[in-house]
Image (cartoon, rainbow, N blue to C red; front, side, top):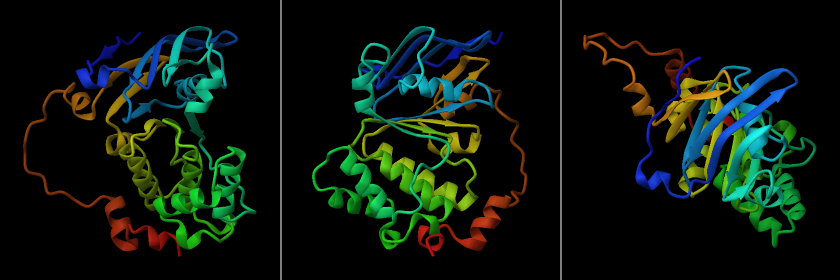
Length: 269
């Protein structure tokens, strides 16, 4: 069994976390999936939950979103207990799964208006227009979602999750199946969420994604958090490398982006 390594948070981070998990356990029949998970996520921050397939990332998110019940332990989201105050938790969160949950028959704007109406919000049209602008989808607002690229669909999906201004958002592997350019578009959308004060818990298998986005990274392995810290803190866990001159060669991603560009407008054509 791997030892748990927790790098202490700063005093500001430790106050009133948006998500607090203590000794959470979950098994499916005889298979233990979560084995005593401890985790804090500071308000307005991005925490990347890293782990391989089967590590328990999605199970943990489902428990925090009140979709599964834990076998043992406690979890609080936005100050509410996920077991005893499920209704308040659901009012505080939004969950975006691994695949975009958008209606392809409707236009982008119609998708947003529909969700705003379902939440009984005033002026759903204005809400939709604001989110289209924030996620650079205004020019595609009246196109059917079936014509959208993968990155555009994902951005629309995340925009839909913001309706009602939930303080906490769960993004379960949001860049699954996207090409490099679409991934960068989604990364920018996630950064804007945190910049607006939203707390984001992001699950991913991609180390570069965690490094690009996260304020803190937690690694879930064999049902336990084995390390939790900032990207720089995690890097310092390994010995410093010897310094030597090596000519840097461009990566395939560098070449791809140089050829096709990174501007969102190009992906929207």
